[in-house]
Structure formats: structure tokens, C-alpha cells
Amino acid sequence: MARDKVKPMEKNRHDGKEQSCHAIPFDCIALLLQGGGALGAYQAGVYQALDEAKLCPDWVAGISIGAVNAAIIAGNPPALRIERLREFWELVTYDAFKYYPPSFSSLFTHSDNEHQALNLFSAVHTLNQGVQGFFKPRVPNPWLAEQGSIAATSFYDSSPLKSTLETLVDFDRINSDSIRLNVCAVNVETGNFVNFDNQAHKIRVEHILASGALPPGLPPVEIDGEYFWDGGLISNTPLQWLIENKSYQDTLVFQVDLWSASGEFPQNMAEVLTRQKDIQYSSRTRANTDRFREQHELRHNLDRLLKELPEALKTLPEVKKLSKEADSNVYNIVHLIYRNTAYEGYSKDFEFSRLSMEAHWQKGYADTVKTLKNPKVLERPHNRDGIAIFDMGKEEHNTPEMKGATA
Image 1 (tube, helix red, strand yellow):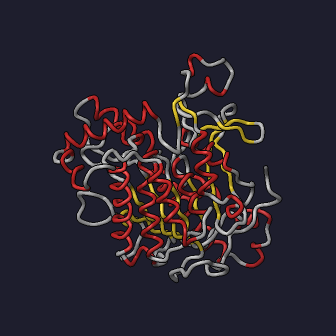
Image 2 (cartoon, one colour):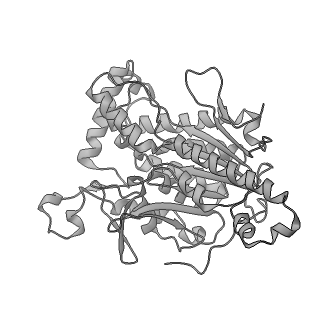
Image 3 (cartoon, rainbow, N blue to C red):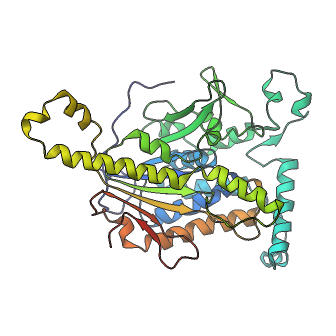
């Protein structure tokens, strides 16, 4: 259901805030969350670190598991967000060592091979049993279900996730515009990539389910008479929507990716499958970032050029049309990218063990704390193009990547 009109994003970051926010020279903080299944706990760790640094997102966008995390963040008051994220991730992860001493799990993680075997066991458990609070196997198998029924379109039933979201997320809060929320999905029949924005749509639980309905595992979700699948089928990163939205605000962007486009050459078939998935779902994040930078540089340069025109020329229809594309605002884009450990393989996105969840959460937290130690991340870019791009987590490099940033 569409709402009356799209409202402009709030300019004063401290108006109506429910928490004390760190004063920064930006109008907006945007948190962009990629899809990646079980790896999504990394994003929860990122949010915890941002919350502790009093960096309050004004705008959260997500795809697939990123949409689930985004809904939990936007659908709860700031004081409860980490608690609700923790509730979700503990609910959907399998604790094989619950009845053993804390040190017992270390017996199975002495080497990468042992840890890999443990993760494989957990992934097989997911395939056979589903995930509590998330999805359950269809009985009978979809090949035996009535043709044309929803049961015939997926191997798992996502109704448990619907119940979980209805318990953990306040959709009235989401639709109150206290924080901007975008989730993305794909129309099954048209193949079009669709953005659901709480400033243009009334967001319901179905919008979140649709964003994470990855076939053939999960079924399509009906919204107002149309069916939708996971947005990651077309683009697994919300950065594309930020490019197209033209928010025209000074914006600090935290782009949280669960797949790394860069990686080592595979040595066997298992590594080939893992590398293939990394490349496929990283969704050309760096290419999209480069595209954003190039487009913003053009808009920024156009803005400076138009300001130098004589007054008589500024009234020309052609100039007025160009002025709509000009942008004088500045952007910092901060990449936080989960990078695989040696024991993780093809099943890492459906390996829902408690042990891995805690490791992913802690990694997201640590990467963000490390990134925020660089003071330039929170400073306006002073270069000519008005944009700076950071990746403080690049491994095997002596210095962090800071494209467009000034020393």
C-alpha cells in the first residue's frame, strides 16, 4: 500500500531523538546492510559498536538478512535495539554445546580442519531440520505438493520468521518515520527490482519476508496481489538505491557487506564453490561505490560550475534542468566487509551455529571499533569532489584504503 507522498529526510539529526547522539558534521547517517544469511550476525556487531559510539542511524536499508536486521533496528526504540538483535540471533542459532562447559567447544576447534567439520555438521543440521524461528522443512517435499500451490514453490516454510518478526518488531514504529527504512525485493513475474520505502509505503511484515525470500529455499511472498522474491537475486547491496535516490544531504554511509569480492585463487572444488558464491553475492560492491563516486563528482562539479554562471544564464530552461542534477553535499562511505576465516566454506551462509554467530557478531564489533579509531571517518571530506571512501579492514595491507580522502 502506497502512502500519500515521499517526505524529505529530516535535516536536523537531533530533533526528536530518543537517545544522545554524537555530534558529527553530517545531516544523515545511513546504515546499508547486505544479504548473507547466517553471516548477518556480523551486522549486529557493527550496530552495537555504532550504538556505543553514539552514532545514531537516520536511515537503514537492507536486503535479505540485512532487511531483517534493519527492521529490528528501525522497529524498536534505541534502548532496546541491541537486546532485540541479540534475541533474534540467539533464537535462530543452534547451540550444540548448550549442556557442556564453555571450554568444551574448544576441543573441536583446535585446527581449521576440525572447525570446518564442526561447521559442516551444523550446516547439515540446518538443511535437515531448518532453523528455529526462521524456517522449517516442508512436509511433504515440494515435488509432491499440489502444482500451483505455495507449498510447491519452496523447500522450506518461512512462517516461523513471520511470527518472530511480529514478536520482535513494532511495525507501527517503523511507519511513524522515526527512522527511514528501505528494504528491496524482486517482483517474481516482472523481474523488476523494487524498493519498499517507509516514506512511500506502509511497511508490513510481508515486505521484510519478501526481501529475504531466496528461492528455491523460501517461498515468494504476496504483497498487494503481487509476489516477490529476495532482492539479492538482482542486487545484494542497497548502495545502488542510495545512488538513485539523490538524497542531497551531507551523509555518512556505513556499507556493511557480508561477502568479499576479493579473495585467493581456489585450490579445489570446495574452494571454487565458496569463491563463486563470494563473487556472486558481493554484488559488485566496489564497482557500485566507484559508480557512486563518479556520479557524485560530476554532480559536485556541475554545482560549482552553475554557481559561476552569469545571472542572465541561470534563468535558461536548460540550466534550470541541469541544476536539478547538481549536488553540493558531501559523503563519507565507510566499507565494513566480513572476510572469511580459513575454516569457513560454501555453507557459511546457512551454518546457523551459536559458535559461529558469536564469532561473526564479535568480528563486526571489532572491525567497527577499529574503523572508528580513524578520526577522518567522522570528518567532512575537504577534497574538491566532496566524497571520501574508507575500508579500514583490508587485510595484508599496511595502510587502509581511503579513496578521495585528504590527508
